[in-house]
Every structure is written in C-alpha cells, then in structure tokens.
Image 1 (cartoon, rainbow, N blue to C red):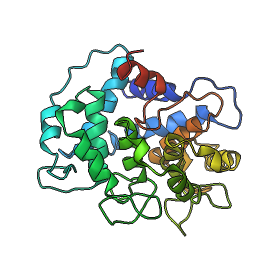
Image 2: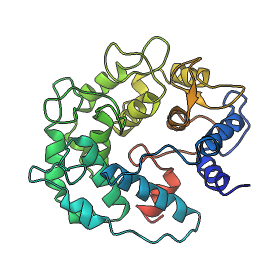
Image 3: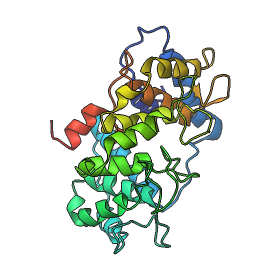
Length: 292
C-alpha cells in the first residue's frame, strides 16, 4: 500500500464498517478517491492562508489523533480570535471578507481545540441570528438569500453554517425549528433528491447540507428518507466507483464524500454515524469534545 493510500484507506474506513450491502457499492468508491492523488500528484486543494484551511487542518488533526498519531498542535487560536469583528462576525482573512462561513469555521476550529473562551461567543451568536430570514432560513450576511448549504469555495450558502455554529455553541433554542424545518423539507423534489434553494435541480451534496440541518433541529422525519437513499444510490458509478451530483453525471471526490456522509445521516447499513455539526465521525467527536 502506498503512502497516499494509507490515509485514504483510513478516512474511508471511518465511514465504511462493512461490505455486506450490495446496493451501496462501497468497494468501488475507494479507487476513485486514491486515483485523484495518482492523477494529479496531490489532491486539488488550493493552498491559502484563508480561515477555511484552519478548519480542515483541525479536522485532519483530530482524525489522525484517533489513529494514535502524535500531531503537534498548531497555535491557530490567537489568529482566529483576532479575526472576530466588533459586531460578532468573523473575517475570513486579514483583508476582511465577512460571512457566516467564517463564523462556523471559527467556532468549529476553536471548539475542536477547546478554546471557545478565546472569543465572544455571545456576540458571535447574535451576529448569526441577525442573518435569519422571514422564510426561516439563514443568509451569508444580514438580509442575504437563504441557502441550505455551503460550497466553501464558490457559492455563498449559509443555513448549514449558521445552524451548525448555533448547535456547537448550544444556541439552537433561538431557532424557529418548525419554520426552518418547513423551508428545509421543501428542498426535496420528486426524484427524492434535495436542492439548495427553490426551483433548483437536486444535487447529492445537499444530502449533507440539508439533512444535517434537519437532524440538528429534529425535523428529519419531515422528508422521505427512502426516496433520498435511492437518489444517492442512483448517483453511483457502479463500474468505476464514485458518486456524482445527479444520476449519469461524472463522479468526483466532493460528491462521493457528501453522498457517503448523507447515507450515514440516513443510518444506511454499514456506515458509521457522522456528527451533523462537526462533520466528523461521532466516535471521534465523543472522544475529542466529550472525552468519552
């Protein structure tokens, strides 16, 4: 096994615990993940000093520590704390880009480091709540359109980031769960798939963004979970592995991850449970956050 395959094998094993389901062709999806490294020499992640990278670093660290690998903690917390603004929002970098992605990333990263006391959590929560809309959803900034998820690189879509940040800080009591739940369950279309906002096509990635939010507010029973499972499974490339955004489209690592994560949230057989707020396996979150 190559050095590249070792971490990929472990990360895959975090989600897949058995191969006894014919429908979920787990064994075919591993090659599509490792082939990305072999094809490009490295994963296609932009190197940046942006706060997005901090959350990825800390998620990787807690996964590695779960393997028993000693990882030297990086001193990110002063940097993150310095990016909180007077109104409670967070900037993504020293140039001052602000939206709710960075609120979530800051809160997630600091929570993983047990350093939430380094920022004003009350102000952070107040800013997130100022982004709530009359339809029950959340925008990336106050007054911005509600959107169910968040593509961290291209589209500003914020419900997941806001709900997850509120969940981590113990502030979900501020959310109108029925109103938000209604908005989220309306994202399911006839095919069983979910979209990110009204009148858009379904996409496997929303199997994570929408489902995780529904689970955090205890409204996942408002959608047809069986139809969503079928939609995700129909997006598999059964010959070459991987999962696409929609049936018969090209597969990629992005949608493969969110497809497997969505199936985990749906309690699909053979997949370990994933925490909807931290986007990490539940057993890892229990160990790192709760000390179990």
